[in-house]
Amino acid sequence: MTESTAKLEFGGKTHEFKVRSGSVGPDVIDIGALYKDTGAFTYDPGFTSTASCESEITFIDGDEGILLHRGYPIDQLAEHGDFLEACYLLLYGELPTKAQKDDFDYRVTRHTMVHEQMSRFFTGFRRDAHPMAVMCGVVGALSAFYHDSTDISDPHQRMVASIRLIAKMPTIAAMAYKYHIGQPFIYPKNELNFAANFLHMCFAVPCEEYKVNPVLARAMERIFILHADHEQNASTSTVRLAGSSGANPFACIAAGIACLWGPAHGGANEAALNMLSEIGHVDRIPEFIARAKDKNDPFRLMGFGHRVYKNYDPRAKIMQKTTHEVLGELGIKDDPMLDVAMELEKIALTDSYFIEKKLYPNIDFYSGITLKALGFPTTMFTVLFAVARTVGWIAQWKEMIEDPHQKIGRPRQLYTGSPERDYVPIAKR
Ligand code: SDX
Image (cartoon, rainbow, N blue to C red; front, side, top):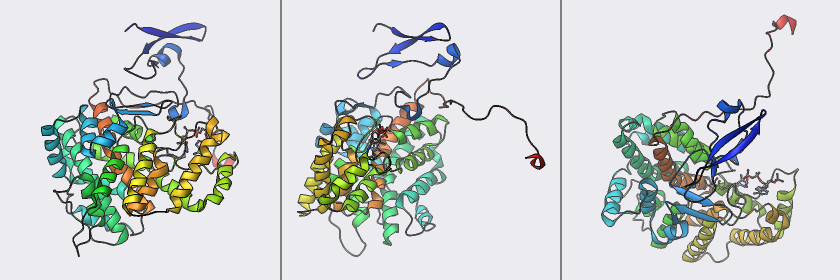
C-alpha cells in the first residue's frame, strides 16, 4: 500500500503527516506528532472529524446506511443468528462453529446468577428510583463481588469478567425491573436461551408457570442484536477512556451505562416514546415538526438524526419490521403511537429541513413502541439498550487492552480562561 502524506503549512513551515488507509472507509491523517512538530493542538469538540482508535470490530458507512460487525451486515446477523452468536462474533472476530457456539452458550448460561448478597444491594434504593440509576450502582458494585476477575493484565481474568458481564446484565436488569414494580426476583433458568431467559426473569411470578412466547423471544433476541455494538459512540468511547487508565472492567461498564443514559444517546428510546405520547395524535404532528425546526425551541424530534448516519439507520428498518411482527403477534391492531410514529416519519422525510440536514429515523425511533408492546415501562427502555450494548463495550474494551500501543487517553484543550494573575486578599476585593 503506497504511503501518502498530508502537508500542513503552519508557523511558516511545511509539516508532513502520514496518511493511513483502513480496510474500508475514510483514510486517517496520523497527527500524533502534530504538537511536538508545531506546538499546536487540533481542535474538534464532539470529535466530529476525529478517529480515536484503530478497530476491527464494527464498521459504519453513514452515507450509505451500512453497519457491519466483523464484516457481516447487521440485517444478516439479525435475520439468521441469535444474540450470543453475535456476542461471540464481536468478542472473537469470527462466527462460531457449532462446538464453539455450544461451549460459549454453556459458559454464559452458567454465569447468569449473581452473588446472592447482591439482592440485598437493591433494597437500598427507593422503589421509584429510575432503573438506570440502579444499573449504574449495581453494575459498578460488581467489582466488589467479583474481584477475582479484575486483574486486566491476566487474559483469563479478562475473559471471565467479559463472560460474567454479558451473562449477568440481563439478570441485574430484570432484578432492577422486579424491584421497581415490587415483585420478587426471578432466578435465571438454564434451559432458556438469552432473550427467553430475560423475558422469563422479567415477567414470570412465583405463583404460576410462565411460558415465554417464542415469537416475542425471537423479537427480543433481534432487538438485542441490533443494539450490540456501534463503533466509537459516546458510551463506547467512555468505556475505552475509563479502561485506558487500567480501571477494572466492571467499573468501565458502569461508566458506559452512565453515558448511555443521556437522551441524546441511549436515553433517546425512552424520550422518543414519551415524545410520541406527548404528540398523542397525528393532528398534532405539524406543531411538533415546527418546534423541531425552531432554532429558539430546544425541542428535538427524539429518535431522529445521527452523528454518523446521514441516511436511514439500517437498524431502524429492521426495528420497524420487528415492531409490526410484535404488534401482530400480540393482536394489537391500531396502536395510536405507531400511527403517530409512521405519520411523523412520513412527514419528516418529505420536509426540506430534515432532508437538508439529513435527519432520518434512528434505532431509537421504533424501539420504544416495540418494548412497550412487550410489556416494559419506558423507564426500562435504556436498561435494555445497556443489556445489549454490554457485549459491544466489552469487545471494544478487550481490543483496547490487548492493543500493544495502548496508552491512557488524555486530550488537551484550547484554554480561553484568565492569564496568570496574583491573589487578592478578601479585604481588598
Ligand atoms: C444513539 O453514536 C451512535 O452510534 C449512537 C447510537 C448507538 O448505537 O450507539 O446510534 C445510539 O444514540 C442514536 C441517537 C439517539 N438520539 C436521538 O435520537 C436524539 C435526537 N437526535 C439529536 O439529538 C442528534 O441528532 C444527535 C445527538 C443524535 C446527533 O447530533 P449531532 O451529530 O451533534 O448533530 P447536531 O446536533 O449538530 O445537529 C445537526 C443539525 C442541527 O441543526 P443546525 O444547528 O445545523 O441548524 O441538525 C439538527 C440540529 O439542530 N438536528 C435536529 C435533530 N437532530 C439534529 N433537529 C431536530 N430534531 C432532531 N432530532
